[in-house]
Amino acid sequence: MYGQQEGAEVGYNPHKPGRPSHTYHTYMIANLRLILDVEVRSGKQVASKHSAPGLWALLERLPREHWPALIRGDRDWGTEANMREAEQRGVPYLFKLRLTKGTRTLVDRLMRGYDWIDAGQGWQGAESTLRLTGWSRNRRAIVLRRRIKKDLAVMSRAQDGPEQLSFAELSDQVDVYEYSVLITSLAHEIRSIAQLYRDRADAENNFDELKNHWGWGGFTTQDLKRCRTMARITALIYNWWSLFVRLANPDQHTEAITSRPLMLYAIGKQTRHAGQNRLTISSTHAEAEKVEQHYRRIAAFFRELRSTAEQLTAIQRWYRILSLALVKYLKGRQLQSPECLSAPA
Figure 1 (cartoon, rainbow, N blue to C red):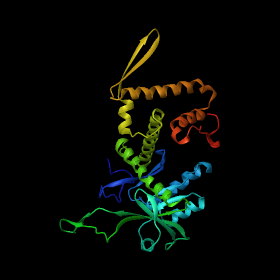
Figure 2 (cartoon, rainbow, N blue to C red; figure 1 turned 90 degrees about the vertical axis):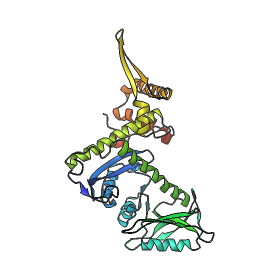
Figure 3 (spheres, rainbow, N blue to C red; figure 1 turned 180 degrees about the vertical axis):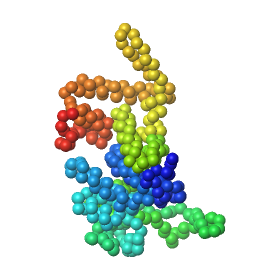
Figure 4 (tube, rainbow, N blue to C red; figure 1 turned 180 degrees about the horizontal axis):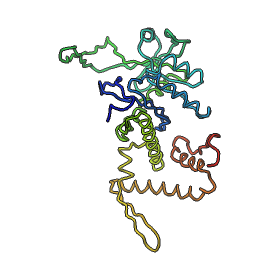
């Protein structure tokens, strides 16, 4: 059935050339690793101009005080349209820029004699203002560079011939850098900006986990509407499981490939005696003692929550659960529900 669904079209995918597919546009809270929404579109609709309308609509549904601290995106998001929309809404952004002629001119200018400062992890940074053709205003641009110190092996591919390998030995008179150009509305120092963008790479692990361990994109039907429904259901279950595992271990996100064997692979036996039902669970995992500690922690929390459940609304109970699952980020504070969700359930 794959490739025959409504909306499946041949788009840009170097790993599946010529295969009709869908594209998943995803809006995610990066540090919390939680999916806010996902849209399934045609395989040709991969650009940010197809993602952006859903992002702005999502923000409009949220109270202003709950908007993100910043929007982060790769070079496809570093366009005048996206930056203008973010500026009009007052949302800080951090995007990467494509290496166009104007961008390369900026890099060339900064490389020649500007003061470069430490940007962390071997990177150096310098900043300037930039206004490319078609832009409505000057914007803050940050160039990051990192020196390549090792000798290089270069592979070249002829159109009709075999691959050829050549070696480049770097002398003391030659400096070779890898570099990137960031555009931002943030006023942070360069080192903080560089780290914020490096943190974006960690968010890519979520998509690997969703695709390979949660089957995202594998639950498809002939019509596009149900494909979208299945994508959202998968994302919702992923969120639920991530929060459940955080109740057991609030200090880190544990991917499904690790957490499912740890928390689910066990033998259960139900017995009844003196009018009471008892469920005995025997974990076969090598870290069975850790599993027991996790479940005792969760059970103790829900016992306490159940004792006060009658005094709380469904929304308030849910926020108690979230406050414990996200205690690492809240630092002990209790979440309060937005006014739009405060009505009694």
